[in-house]
Image (cartoon, rainbow, N blue to C red; front, side, top):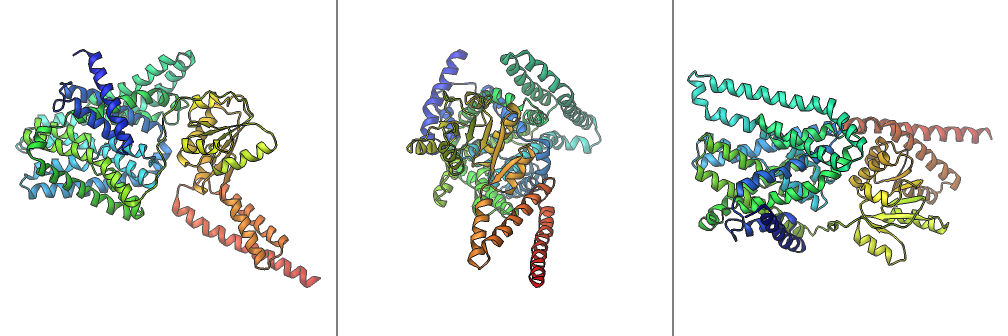
Length: 602
């Protein structure tokens, strides 16, 4: 069949299956899996060469890791070191130990059990991140914890893949022959050299090249160079025996502080979405339905055992790391499946004669079925806990915005609407942007004009004539979306004066770090008003109540700015908070003493 015919089959199957599973609340990933199974060798047999398609579709995972790297600035990566190398290392170690022990109990040799345990301890980065993104759970505590664990797993896959040939050649090494050991040492040296080359090249060459290409003004060439950067880095890593995804991730991190990160992300995003969908379909096509029909109870038991072990480990670690019960369950279920690295590890183990082909095929089927089970388990979890998540928004085109206003309000919820009502009362025009279609429909019922769209999108901001506006009111509720929008506006429309709403002190610090000078914490002033009223009810005069509240406000805002450099260190923040609280008490005590002295003098 021609390439054009295969493409038509892929697109047709996705168009049928994905909207159906989305409508049923099962998510897009399960739709892609079902579409792949439908057109694969065990379905309608419309597509045959599954392995080649799966290998090509892994580029989708590569692009996903590159975009994750773009969004993960080195400073933020450093702040995550405890969760990545603490939580992630414990998850891999505990899961691998328990799964290896289970393998020995069921008759595997210690070497076979070790390889199986290590492979099954890894989860699917593509599946988990896609599912969390669909559920809008990436900014949550369990979403960040899941990302940290997945990041460590991607890093851990490198030494696992490197050590497999050494395990297979253990007899040769112990008998005194050293060629294979020397070859491994050379491979390790090449791997370190490749990583160093990527880091140095990213620091010294990438940005000047991007600057030169961007100056040409030809967007197609910029897109081509973005793809070349990702695929070239991934290919270099593959040639030295490392993970393509790791190379792409490193390249993304190196460009995370670049002024071109948003442009590269926007250009690569469509390719990532298409190829990730193809990857999920290829996984669906690779499912050995015949073996599933032949041994359904064995496979069901193995899948249940794998998921149960990983859920138990992850739930326990989540609770020990301070997550509440519900977040720990979400963390455990989201990354309880096997991962795509297991396919690679099992294939290498078969080639190195560590595992038999039949066992490898059975385990690959177990990993695949565990992937299929993940969105179903998350759905069951949501139903059982009666979780009311935010609706997944449709990806709509940029609206045509005819207004030409001096003020843009991003986020038209409770906070943004108050600002808008005041401006409307003074007949000052504004352009309101809101990402929630439900909120857009609700606000329109009251006669307000509002536009649907993600305000962090550069094309939407340009359509809203941000280049001609003077004021940008950042009133977005979601913290991650707020920071993403603030960064886009600061870099692309530096002339705009930004008035930002922060959900809390942590959010405020992040906005200040981006260079936003006017930040208002949403509950701070309303809390001060309630405090003033409480003082009045306790018999404090209105003048004295106002003075106390104003002193507290000045002191707290001074503290907010003074602590901006240490807000990442929770322990230090807790320590200085006690000092400042004591200082505030002393200020009030000094005021009372002076009042008493004045009263005595009078």
